[in-house]
Length: 300
Image 1 (spheres, rainbow, N blue to C red):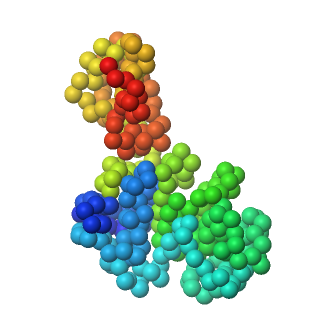
Image 2 (image 1 turned 180 degrees about the vertical axis):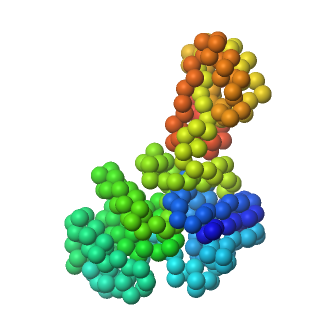
Image 3 (image 1 turned 30 degrees about the vertical axis):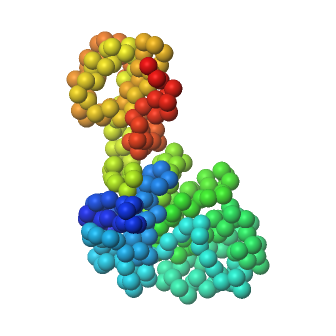
């Protein structure tokens, strides 16, 4: 069963296309990482899925309904980001108590356990917290709500490294006990890679990849060796990234599933065959310039 389905989805802001002809589906009970650089369209896409924003064209269905103004979607979804607002008259403890009336599957035991673990003061008010503590409290709301669709949009802003690590661990433990759909938006794949099942990679509002994390790790391969040999081997191949390594050596990243003969010949020619980390590949696939910053300095 597909929980989310988008077909030809487009969102315009004036002349700018924040989302451009985007099509994908997300099956039930998956942790999906929405990955991409700042400005890739991640937040716009999530707000359309959440029903906060209407698409300009195309189709989007969440729980088989158009999410915009849908009671079914809003009652089964929570959207967590750094801009969450709560009544200023309520303390943190009172917010947790109020939340239990809004969310059918609210887990107060989990909420209190996380609240105590992160040493939050129950009498404090949300708007008086530091940025990191606000993110921590918002995360507690997101996990304890147990919503069938939980959206975390860059939820770790301001969190210390240790708190982020605990948050990822808590998210995974809770998901294993209570499977549901979680979408986790981030531009830092290296931190969240181990908790994700699928990755949807965006660049300038367009889909670059949508596949399981395990497949992403085998998607590309790097070749390192003498320039003339590398260029000869990779002629006709789609190159994701390349950089010079001195005058005579080059490093080039290509797609693995079309490189069988290239790898065989490269090995025989003394070319190094290297794996490509998933987070580095995502950077290569979303960079406009396949040579990265080196092109600024390599003027010859």
